[in-house]
Length: 475
Image 1 (cartoon, rainbow, N blue to C red):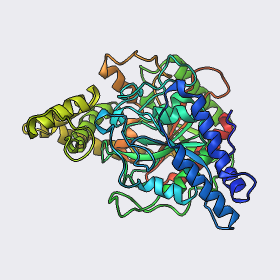
Image 2 (cartoon, rainbow, N blue to C red):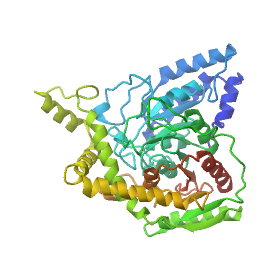
Image 3 (cartoon, helix red, strand yellow):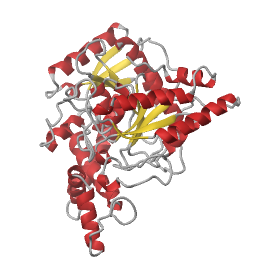
């Protein structure tokens, strides 16, 4: 159980003077110091966080309006540009890099009074599903130190499961918010593509990357989204927001149709995950929800499509890390070409190199049509299948992952086995639709398992409301 109140209550207490922002930051800093053994945090922003908290308290005393997240401490994944600490994306090549500006998401949260207290660990450049690809450390799952927290936002999810702050930010390119939320037993929200600006966030796959929150409740996730969402002139892919994402409905599921995705229940799903998800479906049915089986025939192809398109975008995005303009540079190089080679050889980890080589290959002359172009055609087919399925259902339903959290080191020697962890999440990013992971077995002491709900593009409010209702049923 979290000892943080809901976000709107914390902000109300700070705004009314019932509690100080400084005391909240100090509480978070104390927790951060006590839970170092889980390796969820890359950097703590003690000085800048306390300075901001003091300013907020001074504004409260002066009778000024603070914002909807007044004094709320939060943790940002370390691929967000934030003042007060280096931004490394957990990669050696960015180890010395200090942000020259802040990401739009951070600026919007700070404008509402939120205070960034730490930067969370991740798979380097967000390439991974377990946070074992970090160049600095492997984050441990708070429920079992021998297991991974998921990835790539594993540090963020572990930090919330450890109760280090009331909420954290993650990025989701193929499941990187939902998977760790599932493995750590928290709520993870991936909005519609383009709803939150990616300006100031280290890019991975630009047509797939989405920013979202990891929280204890759906209601908190909705409030954080509401503070971040909307168009941004610094990110041309951003879209108009709905009027509001807060004030979610109650616990009534009658009249809501849930499409159970047939392909999610094929072989590969472990018995414990199958049992938990089937029990969740039954509980939804008992509370008046209509259950309908739907099929997304191209879903089994989504992993192959993703691992063609995503590395292609990775190879393009990582080309800027050349050791010349910023980040790590190998000083022993004799000329420019050798500087490129040595800086990248030492700076990039194995997974980054693997994705650069794969991406460069599928984009190369003679292979572009065979791989990249065909993958784009299948992506369009996947989008059309999602659109068709969501015409007859309010949301789609299934597991987040085929297994609960696996052991540290279990999949590291087999990249394909590691990639299969994403089999139930990547299609959502290919289609650009919103999705959420909700804890499905909180009533037990077993390893956490997440229930995934998927909505229509640009209908985030509807998805969050239904998820809030389902959360009430599964508590």
